[in-house]
Image (cartoon, rainbow, N blue to C red; front, side, top):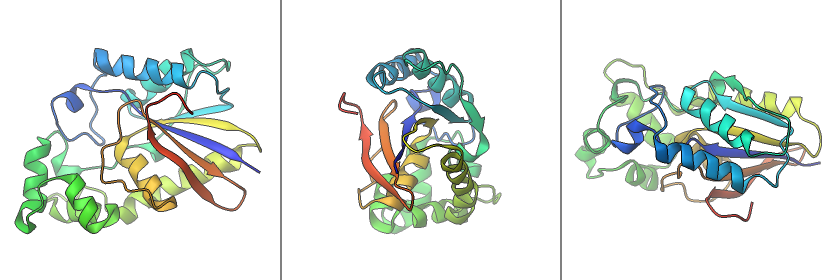
Length: 217
């Protein structure tokens, strides 16, 4: 049995362009972001999707719809769900990313999200963000997975053997998935429009590839 999940990071947004933290906050796709999504759709055009999901963030919904326009399936819209939202960065939403990582990691000599992940792993890095949020709104790793895991489980439950499924979603979410079900390092940014393939064999999930922006999908 094989069910294939194709996780795609949304196209570039204005907050991405301005190097601002963007989790539950949202901003429109830039022209480059639209091109990112269209390009992902063209690279995925040889794959007939049997179902399509996205987070409920407009940037992910639009990305999913642009991908589906390039696809031979009859799907035109995604099933949008909060389960596939990006990590909630709480107080740091919309903040300059360099300033944010300096605030969180600077006291221990680490000034980037990549550095925190490389040193502590993504779960601990997220817990540090949550601990540093003075409002307590940022998601810890456990809170994040309590939201995401049921969503993944439901997608698999609703699928049939051989199904290929699109999930238009977010960079940190994809890094969490890869970290959980593979040994692939995730201390690098998930590229806008990149594809990450995860397979379900009836018993467990495994990551076939991460952050693919090529044509071998």
